[in-house]
Length: 364
Image (cartoon, rainbow, N blue to C red; front, side):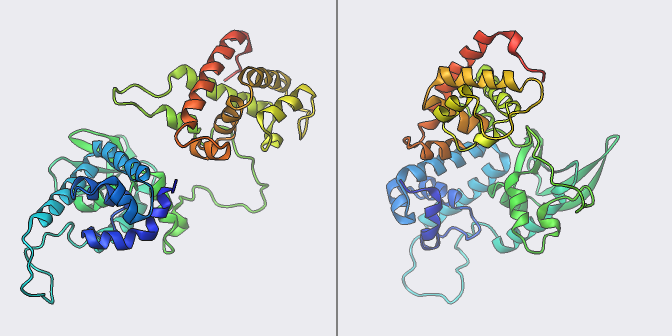
């Protein structure tokens, strides 16, 4: 199965024929081509050089993103423009040297809008900054909370510029209402780092660098777990894919893994790590703080209960913070089956930690 990244090799040929603007993300182009122009998933996959299931995931992704008012308004205008263009009578009598006046424009001055969005994006890096936009208002504003209820206006921009930022995923919805607020997302910070003229590469320098200080070890909890991301997913009925007990079990296994000082066993499988723990031959230092021995015992008990397969998925996703898709590819599983295997492993981990009781709970 071909991934979504392979779609970019044929994207310029495909979207030039559909009339979609160049700045539009490839997922939005696939969504509009399917919804507005009625192209089938197989036809889009064939034109873009990817599988139909890849196109379907992109279509579902942007359909779910329409809960965002900025994304919904932008897609609605693009959808309306495409439908109007498809119903226009063909003109075969002459070929004009300029753009016809009756041809609908999907977005006026799209290149300038994208440039304005990149110029306004660094303002959101400030602490307490956010983009606010009101319903049925043509303007949006980037404000910064100064404390005591006082806000400073950093920039004012057109609503269409904010829509471009939302379609690219550079901003994320923080609060929805009559006045919605947005904050910069991880994709927005990445877009700033890719700009050569962006100061600090899109990062806010909070303290002066000190080359004399030794490199600090990455703190536990600094990176979000893939299980926490998966737990936010909901089905059609609004039920979470993972419950709170399963999420707590994943975090608890990760805490045990860190406290057990198993960083040197990052390449071991579950079977190899279980054998090393039983033989007390774990790579790295075996002299740890009080509680290291108990943490290793808890990890060993969990691995014994899970066994191969389930234990490997738990180690990769819960402890080593590998993505579910990366884990299922490394283990040779079918596409989109890793999350099911992970949920089965979490269900058994909940039962195993319940057997341990409250006496085995860690501080914090």
